[in-house]
Image (cartoon, rainbow, N blue to C red; front, side, top):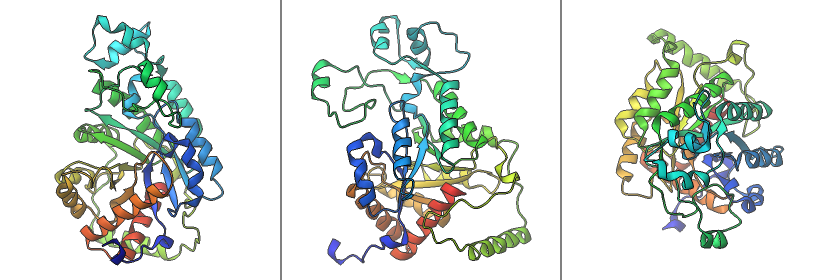
Length: 376
């Protein structure tokens, strides 16, 4: 069947909105050979922040990498909130993890020393300022995640040394979860930083769609957009059409448009958010897409998460309920190379079929959506 499919138009520009190639650094050399136009590369934990910055610099001239800096909820327990009343590492972990007891001292000692939240934010701010188009990500909330058990000697001896340390790597799961209150505090601080620097954000949400919305809403409360009249909406669309027609940039990535002083002023909320590999129900889309919401919220979809399980019908309903200009695609893959290209092609073909788009039209729409999400 694949041989009868129409040719895939890579030359129109294909953009991965969320991936993790720094988890397998040996694969990074493949980026220059990939058919995808650009990769939006996420950081998640202490071990990969510098790696994301390293590959962004390596591919800066080719515009193949958009770096993203942030702390994933799976590692939020490693962050100490400012003002937390703890004197030892064990006290910190007893406070931020659920299901703990006095007998957990040995487990706590296998965990890293907690990093102050203010230090995380200062480091992230420095990285974002050094990369004018960088995003904040991957950040978010996860109610399902449990910490992995400590490494056993036989696991250390057999682990793949080509993988960047810090992830689960197949270890058994412990009973410990990161408290939602702590996750929310770490998420909110990073969202506020994104607003301060007017950067887009990539958000992880597992069994926490309502909680993520509540955190975002708490930031934009009091800053909602006023409802446009029909006349105002018509005028705005005319202005946007004129702006699009006057854009003569030849670059597929396109430099960020020049901004007025007002456009550079800090915001209390992030200007653009991508709900990555969105798995929520269709009815929750409405709260993000209300005209009063000042944040532009996008929804990205991956073959490995959204179209590889029995919930495909729900994803199809979500896709059909979304506006054309709020859809993104991603691979969410841990290594660079032809696997990402194939995953992107697969998910784009699927989305075009479900939306009723021609392949060429769909690739163009998705490329423009990515540019708007990243650059504003």
